[in-house]
Image 1 (tube, helix red, strand yellow):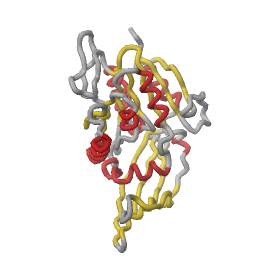
Image 2 (cartoon, helix red, strand yellow):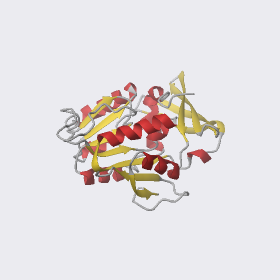
Image 3 (cartoon, rainbow, N blue to C red):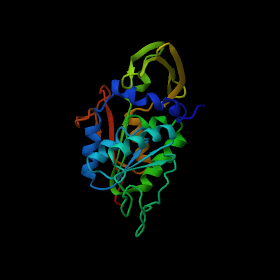
Image 4 (cartoon, helix red, strand yellow):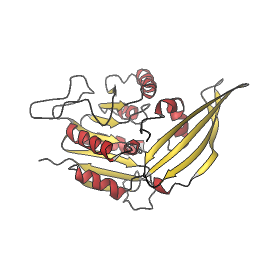
Length: 275
């Protein structure tokens, strides 16, 4: 079976281009408000090109972003340098299943210089837009939830979003999903041709991506696949409770409205107990 991190290195050059045309920044105010309320250091799982971390840094949040993809992180680093946010936004290449921080204990702290993390761990951990669904096995998800609980301060929040109703995504083959210019004048024209495959037995959805890049008479095709686990909100809340978290909110939009199975947005807020 494929690993959930496969394909993301190849996706890096097109990630911001595609997201600007789909999700955009609709979720950024939600994460920014949550981080400001946390009033302490924040950890973002699967930070990618910095789509969430950098706006939070601009708002004054001290944040660490962790991602396995070096090409994704390279783009985030460039943006952080341009924005002069190196004092607030720190990036680490690592595996979210095994977070590279000291487990919070009395009189212990996270390593110096890691995003301004204070004694006792992070005040908030976030996993935006389907990050946890890149964990394709129950073992990997359990390891990640255990790792998150280990670096959160007691009483602190773990916020995550699932891709809404991924298991009901209709299958199709070689559909042109997006088309447009990438970059300034002299950039490339990009077309995304996409195939969606469902594997109900394994609870997986796979997106076969084909980005066709044209520069003048030259054409280059980039092919890769991204696979996600089809977890529902009740299934994820069950896993969170098993890992020791208390569920504090199920949200159906980025303004804090209540969740139901028909909602376009699936958000979960969970709390690490104080004892």
